[in-house]
Image (cartoon, rainbow, N blue to C red; front, side, top):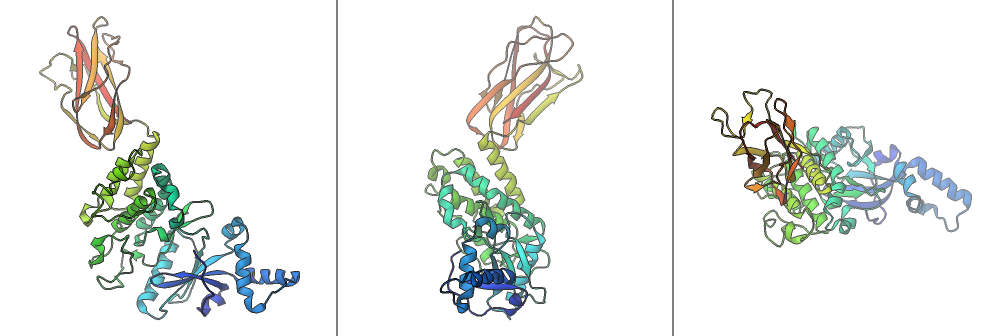
Length: 442
């Protein structure tokens, strides 16, 4: 946050509670924020200054001097001990809508405690409340550091993931943030991202709109069009939309996009981040979130978005463990499948298999029963694409033997959705049966 000039007179309740305003930081749609410190810290600094006989010290400038002193301290002292904090008061103190927003803001911050959501330090206990104090992050906002995320999809997802998780918890508690944007995402001293400014948070249970339709406190660059002229209560999808826009902003190094532009070549991440692994997958995720119509936004909550982010992060890192996508296992000799045509049981062909996510590689194994002298060649097709074959198989006449793995790899990967699986088996004579067949995706 940029430090502006000294503040005008502010709410006396906060000062009586021991929070002393030092300098004005800025303002949002409904409130003004000041840099502040506890009265005890101010007094301790003044005592040090007086005892040291600081040259040029003017009592009238004591708050400015104390502010400068505190901001010069180490990051650990300022951050861990909250030596500097941020005091917020409403602009129009006696406006009913402004008062209700402040109450909602305090309520939401009390309801959810998460490392990536701004921390409430103190608030007015009187009704209606007139102030609250939150943690202060002097390293500024995401806007100041967005260039470091440019073309770094894994780094961007890792950085934003805790914020997505925090908003997911906010959704679970019944709130919609509605103001997720880079200017409201602060940088902690350790570099992590912290979402702040709950000024227009909406409680889904019992909440009423405090502005007329078409008149909002939102930033037009970040809010979905489908909320601007609607009387319907805002849903968590609003935050999903805005989070996705923030991700797009980060990986493009500070570029913005409209929902109506996202499928155009100049804005498509496959084009913008050409050659960057995961660009196509991230573009697909953005298309499910940044939409022109609410019904087209496929993810209902930040929790659902978190699952997709984790999936993509795992896929990019190659750390996703194998997932079972198809399994046939028969413990009965009357129901296992003969490699030769068996009219009493369907063959393993034309099977529709649902992939819950993308897979680069499929690994299959089969359990076979048959005379040890028979030669077998086994493989499978997915959507007509053949796998490697397995043909060095030592059978047992009455006990199922699992084969070695045989693999099918594909670039680009197999998409999520339905696929056709065919098991391909050849034997030089009758008597071999498939007792089990499994396919794992990774």
